[in-house]
Amino acid sequence: ADGLSGAPAPFDKGGVKVALISYISAGDFFQAYQAGAEAQAKALDIDLRIFPGRQDAAEQREQILQAINLGVSGIVIDHGLPESLGDVVQQALDKGIKVVAFDVNLNNPKIPQVEQSDHELASLALEQVAKDNGKDFKAGYVYVAGFAPLDRRNEVWDKFKSDNKGVVEKARFGNVSDTTATSTADQAKAALTANPDISVVFAPYDEFARGVKLAANGLGISSKLKIYSADVSTADIQEITEVGSPWVATVATNPAVVGAVSIRAAALEIAGQAVPHQITIKPTLLTQESLRAAGVKTIEDLAAKIPAFSTSDAATASWIPDKLF
Ligand code: SR1
Image (tube, rainbow, N blue to C red; front, side):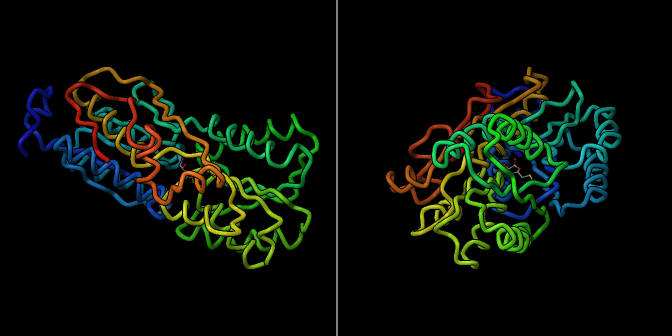
């Protein structure tokens, strides 16, 4: 550890230990989030300890205790179930460890909350739904309660339905696990078979959308279905833009940028510098049409065309290197 010249203590000496503790590790979003966190940590000469998530609340609690015992200066908690985290997070705070939360509401004024502006994300997606399909259609909806981003997106879906009585939710399904896409595909197959009049599916998580697309392809109904999602990755762009794809739009941030912002927020906290309680990274609407027209094939292509996909001005300081991608 060499430290960063001109940085405040303890970053001037380097080797500051920070833990990244995730609830979910599988899937493009979480892998890219982690890669962004690692890149930002490296640039800050942080010794980042990564605890992989396996959708296991008891294990995540245990990992927080392990991080405390390792003597970390900061912990970034990426998703999780708030009810199982409150007491162990308090133990960390009591020891002077700085905590940052991404997409899990820890409800503590000492903990900055990072999110992707999920209300705006869902609103942009549903505006596109209405633009493409009007306000009179039968819908499928993919949702699992208890995940902060999905719960926030769900508030917008509920309002959209109550404002547009012609929108009828015929089926609701969803699964979050280490096989989210394939398990959701099985559920979607059953729901779409039982409700052949569904023409729109709102699937606000890319693993959900991938599952619905798999089901639609398997049933041979891709040409009469439109899928709207959240999130983006290079694999998603390929699935969205391929010929005949029913996945017609997504609304997304670059998850690597979100990971980098989470680490920067922890670094600012550790350095004793001001961090806003709510840190929001704004998402962008990406339609199949616009991606095809711009010849976008990868997330790097997006970063080259859309500034918000290469960097964010959230949680920055002159001493923090932020040109990572
Ligand atoms: C199970 S929660 C999945 C969501 O978390 C992040 O906010 C991503 O956007 C993803 O859609």
